[in-house]
Image (cartoon, rainbow, N blue to C red; front, side, top):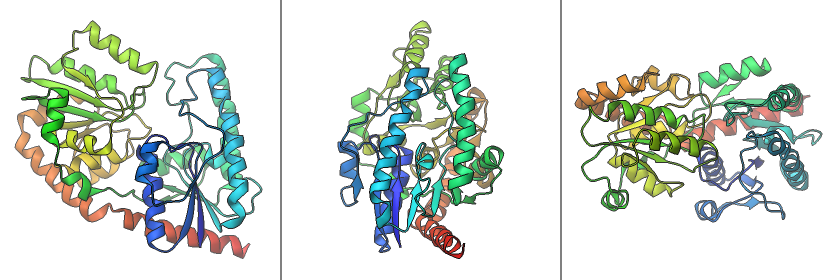
Length: 387
């Protein structure tokens, strides 16, 4: 079996890129030939994927949110054409196409290959909380096209949890296979540069709140900043680190609020940082916060648990259903109350985090994820051949 893996970007080593990298590496370990296709790749990702085969177009594409305005949104057409051209170039050499982030699920029409979509998130304009009328009309048209493309050309849909399975059914009227992602628990459990990171960001003696993820409306870092603001006179030495790539205009919104409320010395922006620095921040932190709305962020709460840290997630993020079911973190939309309760009963929540660490170690591995995906690939191939 030979698998062609398609993802929009490989320029930021975030959640989707981690899924692609781990799937490709573990497929290779199982003797399954694969190739990753993407519109770009950064030097950081090249280092993390040095043993893998990756193809990109000659034309350089930059990472960009496409939902910020109407003209920018139309730029997705050029990306679809370039991604489609790459897939057509290599498809004949592979048995099955595994697509990941939008618009990958739109580019497999007419290739006569079984297609398995790892639906990390339902396509939508997540990064524009106040869309114009033109954007709203474009979104409505896009959803119509999306439903058609998925129902017509996708053989199997995979999701990471029950929450996203429900969203897939609501959008497409289709069932999906649930395959939990893996977590590099061994990597995140150990740390060797905490002191260096404490000095770098001047975090000595802090009761540190941490949120990891790209700065965007969907990750809702503003909610974490507001929680800090509400608790700054109640919890001594409290600080908040926001670790993630800034994106305009949301980063400006955050900065304006911070200046207005006089929080400049209490909120630290790191920008995009290497994974080993993220790991150190998990270990330095007291509580990891994930007030995510509905898009992304699935891996991060479990990474924090591997570092033995209490976590708070919103009820709307995909990982919340697992965290609540296993009782390994706080699932609450009342962020201030949740932080206050953890602060006051910290030993209790440390014990909960330790249970979470053990659960993640035993249940969320990339080896298990890949083996389940291989079975799904085999079923998709078998069902296509029967037709």
